Amino acid sequence: MTAIEVVIVSFGYLHGEPPPAHLTIDLRDHFRDPHISPDLRYMTADDEPVRTAVLGTPGIPDLVEAAVVAVHAYASGPSAGLVTVASGCAGGRHRAPVFARELAKRLLRQDGSLVSLHDRDLDKPVVQR
Image 1 (cartoon, helix red, strand yellow):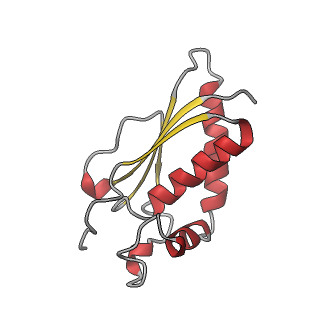
Image 2 (cartoon, rainbow, N blue to C red):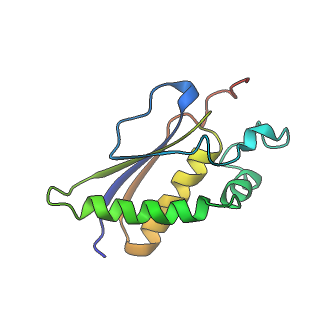
């Protein structure tokens, strides 16, 4: 596979509109939210227990692999160029940034893609809900 240029943005739907993207992954409804655990609520994707919880969620590893395939499909199109992926969850502190980082890691490892990663809402306060 040829290296491609990819921008990945994680975000929280509760902090505003999704960023523009070719592919938007909505993690809110189908995957459990670490926010519900008092032990994880104030942690972020920077903390190992959060990464372990998210990546251990059934379906997440398969969805990351499907996103890798989708990125390559976009990149192989006739007007291929930069591919932007947005991953969103409720607050943007747990599921979305873990997913975004894992996607970036797999793209880099698989084919040396040029990946830019931005966690839009990771440092925002915990949303009380």
